[in-house]
Length: 57
Image 1 (spheres, one colour):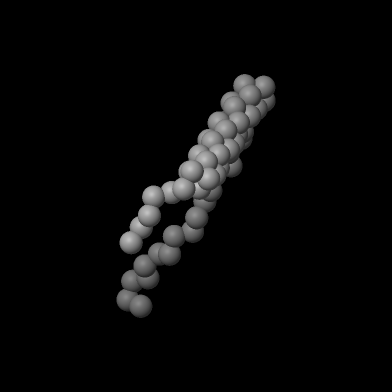
Image 2 (spheres, one colour):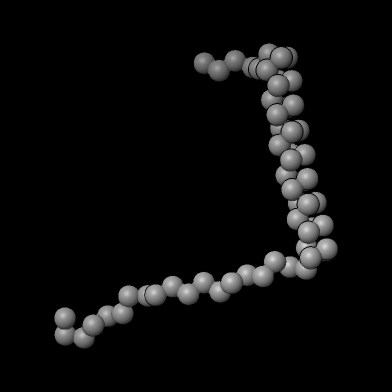
């Protein structure tokens, strides 16, 4: 059966969760600053070759 987290496990889980949250927020901030300073990144169109059906094959 499962047992509740100990205080140390709870603290570690909250610390890791906080670090992940801050890392994601920092990444979003950096992206916003980059777009603001340089404009949106140029996106090259992706052309994929689709297989074509051959008649009478």
